[in-house]
Image 1 (cartoon, rainbow, N blue to C red):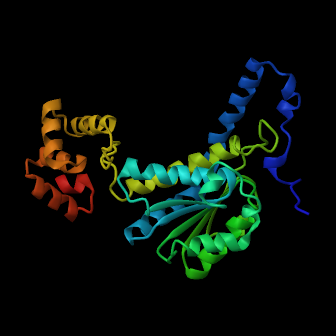
Image 2 (spheres, helix red, strand yellow):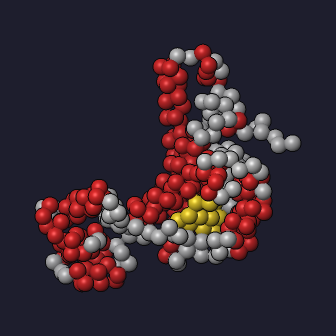
Image 3 (cartoon, rainbow, N blue to C red):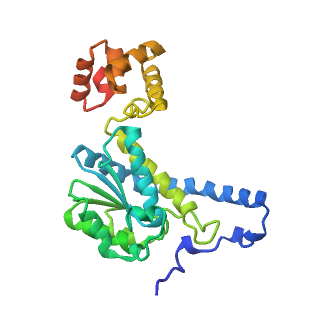
Length: 296
């Protein structure tokens, strides 16, 4: 029998014992107060999160990939963060990947038994040809999901870097990771509903890992998304605005440089250094994509 009684994520919240009798205003106020505890809980875990970011940057610099793997809400959050890296930072879909127990179907419908399989976690990592240059982040609110444990066991076998994010202290999955993170934000507003505070804490941590790792490989200049992919009209206009913000130029100059370069970074270097498109691309190649180095 699975013992859940010691898991914070399964405990009842003393503030919401009569949740079904509260007014909408009362329920909103308590929920908002509970949500404020999440960021504070994540702050306590910053020292544990830092080495995961460092290892992710190292992995990217070696041509490795970042994998998030989990079941249910945890798996969905990993897929969400991974998918957003493509348009935000201009990386390939292979560079950051989210894997969920049960596959794509599990994004919207629970797949019976998938999260309880050790072997399925291993198989899913085998199917992406995991290597020792990759980093695997196992995500489980409960901290005990067998699917995640199986994946971590396989990742450790082949020498990939392993990390975990759990929302309970002394989590079982922490035993299988080189870099475990445990965040306790307290009992959920709705008992056992880990899509709430637990899910929010996981998303905050995933945001940190992906965003700051991308900064570490030159995907950001100042606080601007200079590798954004202009895949629609809105993002084309955003690209021009980014060029204006980065260089101080007017709209027409930004528009002209972007139309020539078809690339935000290249346009910025062209304007700031006065060089041609080809010379700007060469400077960026020599600086490994870091604009500050390219314009120095």
